[in-house]
Length: 471
Ligand SMILES: [Zn+2]
Image 1 (cartoon, protein in one colour):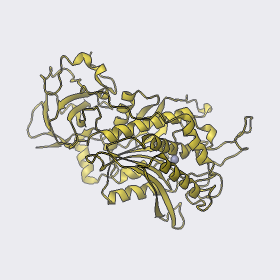
Image 2 (tube, helix red, strand yellow):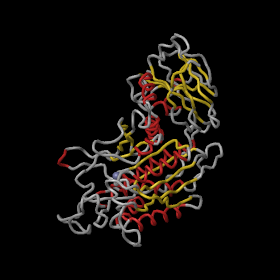
Image 3 (cartoon, protein in one colour):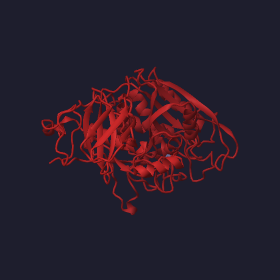
Image 4 (cartoon, protein in one colour):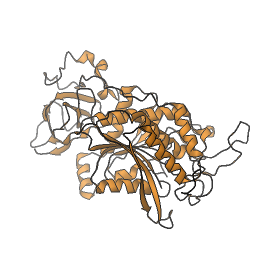
């Protein structure tokens, strides 16, 4: 009767109302330790925020406009006003500026490093828009939504030929721009950054430059949602994979990419192979999706990325920031990174244009992915700071579990969460009130534990996985 559902720890009172008589919040009697302590905080469902402006029509119009630049190859023309990456990035910049006066939009110019896919140094630019947080206690935290603006055809070094990149990754840029439009007038407590990168196809150079710069500036990036190929949930019919228009995959690294030998040793000792900050972020996305009951639900994939593929989120991971990748439930590889063939996409008939063209983007699916992103941004930006130094106290041998953490300056209280060591997602939660130490009658040996902070309006932080310490 107390068996939790997969995303239950985040659900509001409706799923736990029968339990509230037994388990009162804020320090009531603890139940029999042999029973699962299923007791999410009885918080209100937080305000949803304005995501109503996100529509299939607006989303696909962005994809179409970006495809109409012919190519957005990183090394393509920057002087034309109608074709190439220069025209495309200026258009994205205009969209950010038009979204609202509080958005600080700019081109982030830098010299692309010479490498296998960039033969000589060249000035390139990310497009960035920053929505400053409205709460001084939270504005130092940064939440990102990311996609890559550049595209490629079958020849990675061809800056001239058509490369509409409709799914890869105009679809992701549509998510970023739609989120900017939806949130530009919202009063979000933390700072939200909308980023369209350059040079993803040339070696992730734009994301690397941005993430490394942020690390150098010691910025506090707490979450990165990277959207890359999010417009088409179908696979070729010949491959026998049914389309899944209600699923988007969310990839996350297990062991932190930036961990050094000593840190990896510590993670092994904790058995924390599936508890990186990025993985907590992925679980958070699933919790928000369940709470908000959005149409497209995430399927968490516990690996960094798909085989033979990579993406911008890995550069944020490498710089030490939590980052996940959204990608459609299925992919049609025969269209990605291909030359466009056939006549222009007008009318039907057999000889229709193929390649990564706009007609293979599903407007409804794309808008639903954008809504999921927007909801996650709202929750992340309004949440309190995740507890710092969450730790299990292991000063002596005992069966009960004592946890401590440092207070989050903008929290109203905390929940301890835990799960079986074999469970992929957090399944149990207990509201412990506004304390920074708690002892629970559950075995630290048998569960993974974490702590998250909440505010009275219902917004919760990402879970902080509990480390081990003697005090
Ligand atoms: Zn891509």
